[in-house]
Image 1: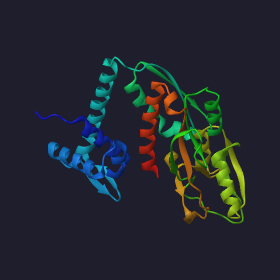
Image 2: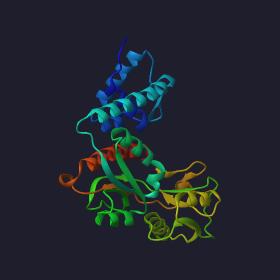
Image 3: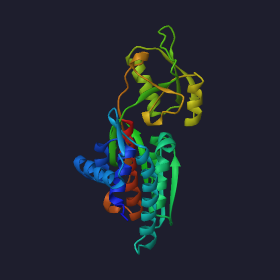
Image 4: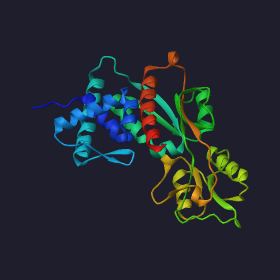
Length: 290
């Protein structure tokens, strides 16, 4: 009976979750050719192809998808076993602040990874706007924060570019005789400011069609046609579309997604572990969304 290599299964998961061998290579710290060779060996062991190319992306075959399910279970058990039997297992409490978009998209994977690695630890999550989260980080009310900003913050431990996009109903059409109605949070809001600045520069009239304090409420308003919103492409909900240049809306600048926190030497082990999990998850998610 053959034995599956857990390291190769981690590479398989990275390839499936990121959608490409190049992104998987960055995630597992190997070259793209090494990733390709690992997965070729796994295909030879299974006796079935695991991927098919779909445009620029690699999609799992039926056999690949089934193996991915087992890989997640095997790796979760491996991580849990190591954590529970280690004399240096980490426990305690760590606090994390995230924007609404992160809470709706990437956070569940982070929580799942943290719980697998540290079953006896406690993760406290605060959801809020980036300006508030940065303030709480400065006041030592939270340990780490994921924030959105125009440039890299001084407290950033990790940072990456992500595009901003217009999101609305697929039947949206720009009418120059009417202002563009926006669905947005009340100020200060990073995305609202980007939307109004871009419209002003393009000399397009605008008005606020709907103000919300929660992301689900905002998406309900957009679906009802009360306005268009500016968010990240990773936050795109079902039933809505990214509105590109064909819809007449102006270009939006990219922005920084940053993980902020204390410098490395002063970081407690549990914070350092959560940082590693966050950086890994954010890098894969941003590769997929960019």
